[in-house]
Length: 140
Length: 384
Ligand SMILES: [Zn+2]
Image (cartoon, rainbow over all chains, first blue to last red; front, side, top):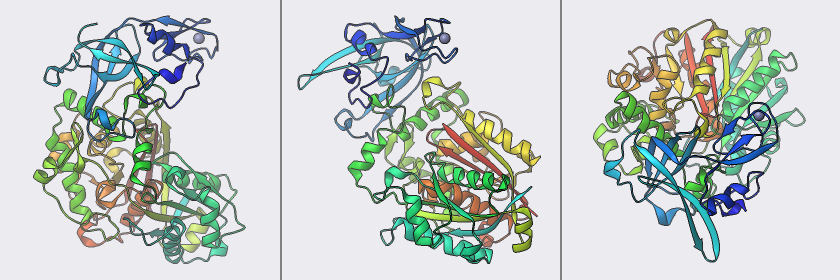
């Protein structure tokens, strides 16, 4: 059910669709290649190291460090009502990177490069539709 | 075998509600064949650089080919976002180097004001990687803003540095009759403009435009036979970087630009210090600062100081975007790469108005970036 993922979803069909189901249940998943063990976040079905298509989703830690961010004022279609919002990129402690909104627990004046953040799964329903995503917060 | 530029044609960039995209292409094409002194029958093939999703007309290459009167010669479209024009040049260069064609017309053309604002806003939401990034409302300025924030953090780059890039490019744009914005601006005005994505403001961003540019390329013997002043495509670099910022080695430069520049310098047998005039992809002011660094005009992190010391003005160490750049000239995405090469070729031929001519320029460079750096083309041009 990858169409659950995101405020606006552009790519409902993917081999890692289970990611969204896990997220709905509160788990953040990356991928692990069953052949060579290479891990990836965001998850990918096909191994970038050994080209194997045999993968599994594995839970990843939620700790991250802020790499960069921006406050988006001019928002695209579907995001107008949220503007302005802060999009951030953070390095996950266990490897991989994540792009997400900075959540309400992080005040703009308190943002520091390298600050510790936690990936928090978010679930909400909109017109009977399920939406799942994650935000980056000060506390888990 | 060298490949030479024998014809240059450049249309007026701007909100061209007076013309269709094929009419814009024609305007540049006619100027280029007149400049080359050839006829349409001399052209073996055309390559069109454009980004299809902005046009109502589908499969544009054939329509342009018909309107230019080049049927039944072959044509095709190249698309790599904002670098589509340079991809067209590279494709034409390859076809000549392969010995398949002798003379090829390269046409970069784009209408971006044909589609409505809601359509533009919808497209704007899909410039990033759509599976993991666009779902958070990322935008094109947003990505460059994140590069800028990191650059400011690591290297003490300031909003004033960014504004100085806009000031320079508007200064030269004011002297270019083909430019969209022909007015100088002050740093204060740039810094007071509306915020788009922190730290980028309206004056840090280039504007969409309509326009076309055309080059006629020829194999060495033909170029020497036809043209008194051919300009040679001496170094042709081309590289990619991951689409996703989540898979980039760093967020303070474009690895594709570093690699494309390395290839172009090596092929041309020159280094960054030999470049007298350059066209770099200033879709945002931060992009020009990163280009100074990625191209080796200065060390990584020194881009801010480079502009503050006016080293990219004429009379500095390398004149950059002295036609106004994307910032003031406007950015018709498919035409931009071809426009850059037109400008450098004109500079090397000494055919630019004196107020923005780089005196004695014999080696020049173009740096054309697609998207947020997933594609980069760098060319080194030399005059005979
Ligand atoms: Zn593997």
